[in-house]
Length: 330
Length: 220
Image (spheres, rainbow over the protein chains, first blue to last red):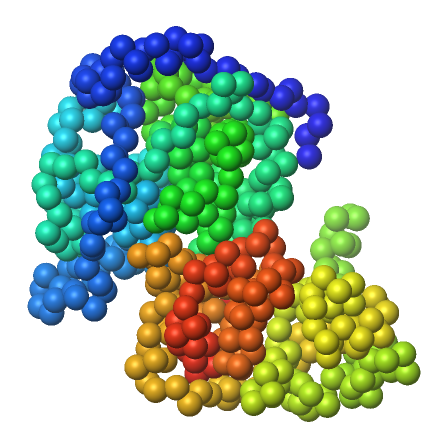
């Protein structure tokens, strides 16, 4: 489309050698301590599944009757069809459903399953530098991934609101019998190490056009029915997650994409990838080299916002396709 | 002034655009469907029925109401051999590119039969099919059918054909063809990847569910 844009190949912030040495010396203790020391650091990756496989979450036919069952069902509906749920949709300021980033209705291993998240909250998060309850964590999802600032309600659901009770009921139900405080196999996304030579937005564009555009459209706007039901989620532009969502980070997106996309071709549960590490990084970079709704933590200008909130693997305040990214779509 | 003039003519233009198309192309489509041509293409209605509803026992698919671009692609692929089908390959080859487009649009515009093709499967099997179609089998990484084929499985554009209102026999046959590698003309091997993760029992259930559903207009 834009042939004049300069292709960006960004090597890792550390050389591969330094990174390897750091990992060797520091080992896992480093990763754990690091979380309490630095802002915006990744969670420690979940361990591999043992011979028994992943946590055995309940089936949909096991939802009980009564008020709790109703809350579970409502929470599930809010999660899967967020744009249709009467209360949840009031807090969605873009075209996303929760289940777009948590495949399998929030149940698929290695696709940030809810049963993996439930037992690790309350939890310290570098992102906002305090201990978060699950209630607050979900509101964070609304603020960033669902761009709640541009929603009808103008912000995320109120703390302890019925919607958050319902969503937490669904999560709690899905995690029945799961150990508390454990980093369960299948939790979160797998991490995919940054390739030695960095990534290439122009290679990512070719991959996107060959493998992703069939569903997400060539311009990243996804697909919707005439009456506004989402068929395929938007990836950039005003209907996508905003500049504060975790998915705008190239490493996070690469981890999601590698084992989850293209949908049906990759298989997160069997850890089957359809793309190489390099391809996952390239196409993640291409996706995240476009404008999206403004970071709600906007500090008045791009540079200040970048310094305060974007000291990580992303293209905020970088040039791509002839423009500097980060101003936001509105 | 010029702008005003344009605004005034706009409704007339819209009317023209929305008026029923009775051009030569649709006449050609109808003619091909009912009579075939003298270059090896037999009449579509012979197998796919006068109402375009296909034939369940024989495994011939419904064409009426299917996406035009999807049908064109299938005919092109069957003409080139990209999609292998002993019956359809010579027929598709006997159609020119223009004729493939005309006959595809003829069937796309035809209203699908209002009644579901139906199934002999037990209700429990149909319900299991519904669960797979709507929720997938994520314990083994199989996405739901509706995730790509749209709400209700009513189809999304050229690449994800309607499944609702399709014959169970046809759906089952296609699954087998994807699994065996006899059909490979899916975008990005998406359907082949999914088909290989399903058991025969799961396929039968899914096919029964969609056959129990009437055809509905595509959502997109």
